Image (cartoon, rainbow, N blue to C red; front, side):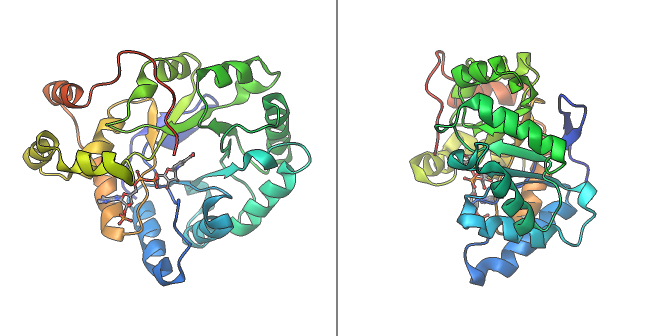
Length: 286
Ligand SMILES: NC(=O)c1ccc[n+]([C@@H]2O[C@H](COP(=O)([O-])OP(=O)(O)OC[C@H]3O[C@@H](n4cnc5c(N)ncnc54)[C@H](OP(=O)(O)O)[C@@H]3O)[C@@H](O)[C@H]2O)c1
């Protein structure tokens, strides 16, 4: 396996800073073979952190992940999955987690996330997460799509400070998290997991891919614009990125991107073309 730079979580665990997303994977039987190959190619190249959710294909993604990791030493894989907000209370979370474990054919999840905030009180979800840790079903937990006020409220809950990550949308053309959320998370030693690192879908992506300055910079660095987007996120040692691909060559390219260094001058250029906002803006969601 290639060496991917790591980040140390608050509990001392080292995790690779580049992993693999799996949204929309596992949904089409005709793509299954290629998707398994892509995930396994990623793992072979060090992308051993794999992100999934009970929501993705209503369990199909978790099943695919379970199959993809079955031939590897489980201890070498860092599995992230997410619980629906309406399953995140004491009446449903234990069944939801057990179902995820069954689909992935594993007996623990490395990081279990609340997918987004719903109507279950954060205090209740935090207590349930700690109970799941106590039972050994999950090793640690975090949240997703939470802005600073939600995190502050969570922090006030009796076990809220045990939350170790917040997974939010972050990519080169969407840098709102840099204003207040990312500094708050750094201060509280909470890793940021960047979802949609390649700006999947929508007009932003096509404008990014067509951007002449980005294309020129990629050409000069002998990489693709996608790799540059990953390298941008990797330049912050407190960030983990989880690009998704169902294509083995892309998985390999993504792993290579973890090693691309962006120089000071190049970062100045990127900041000019894709500046972080000056003022706080609402957290982007998909
Ligand atoms: N917590 C949340 O609410 C939330 C929300 C969204 C996403 N996520 C997580 O974050 C992961 C990543 O986000 P995402 O799936 O929305 O999108 P993404 O990673 O930003 O983009 C995925 C797209 O990029 C393409 N791609 C990947 N590598 C490429 C490469 N090297 N060259 C060219 N194209 C490439 C993929 O197509 P190919 O398959 O053809 O390569 C796919 O169309 C998800 O899969 C999921 O695990 C979490």
